[in-house]
Image 1 (tube, rainbow, N blue to C red):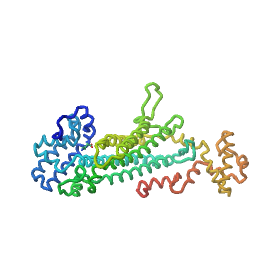
Image 2: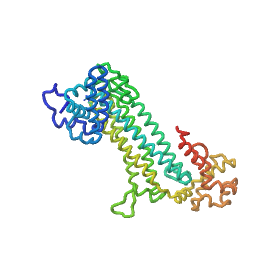
Image 3: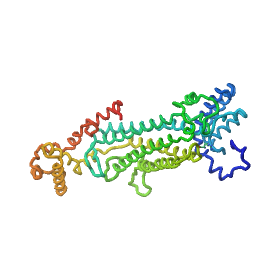
Image 4: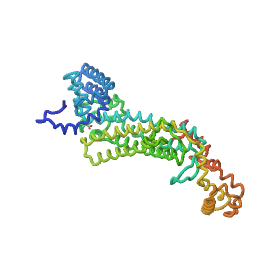
Length: 459
Ligand code: ARG
């Protein structure tokens, strides 16, 4: 059954109908459509289109429908309606007869779909917010547990300078903080109600749109009907927030895949989030992280698709915009699922502290320390850098770490080197010198942890 047809002589072909129908995707907005319809009935009552009794009847029927779809959303998929808006209206007509046919007065599916989708975004946004905060908490807990664990820090995937494992965790805490900020920001802008904008020009009934917006739980009503029905910025903003966050997750996944590799052996992932090989019995693969890394491409793909769909669309509503939901739903579901999985990964991680320490001690990660030591002996940094480069080359040739070179050997490169040099070359001293804000010293990490936990310092 369709909601239009008077103007048509022939029925649409089945092939077109299948192409045009959006019910298989937008059935997920059933509750939002019903809630919007209840508010709309109330608005129609306020302008005397519906009597008190009529609005009470419609509201009751809609509440019943809401309960029924909450219990069994899949029932919707059995129908052959064009979209969720038609489905709800048809159900209402079946329940209330001619009264149900009054509900669409002054309303269009264009302001309806825009409203439903924003309501859906707000709800999903809150679930995602929880997932983000949980993930951040898991990283904070890990940072707390591993705050004194030494880890080699890398640039170009070459061991660069030692950091603490806690410092590594807190880097992701920062990224997730920015994601939380972006999410809140996107949700704030999405929190405006298009209902009452009609098809494009506004509604001809003098309803109080601000009041309607508040009844639906929106911050306020949109201001321009043409924009309101054709704006999908919230979809783009949420997908770009999701994409940026997924890029963070992909880096988290990649770091852990590397740390988990046989070559590094820094961490072991819990059995709960690993899988084996059907052929090689010895294997334990980091599939959870690999899937997170892989799915980041999919979310970014949805963002790109939405940007391209909206590009150069003339005002106001165009059917192209029906393409918004599939990518949005999939993008946000995927993001949420990946965050939940990353939380499990972080919670189940075992760190091999001996291996991380041993790796940090190799690879001349204390070379900068030796340069700084020479600077303290009045050698300009550029010169000190060159001298240390020569020392490292010599140590590589001898196959020893810097601290194993004797004082006489070291003094061949600079007579200013004294025996106090050795205390500067230890891992502890290398770490603890990075004491200024944002550095990896154990004291700074301790402070950063406390700051996040007490909410003292967030950017
Ligand atoms: N299913 C449509 C969508 O998702 C609803 C709006 C249809 N409006 C229209 N004038 N055909 O965008």
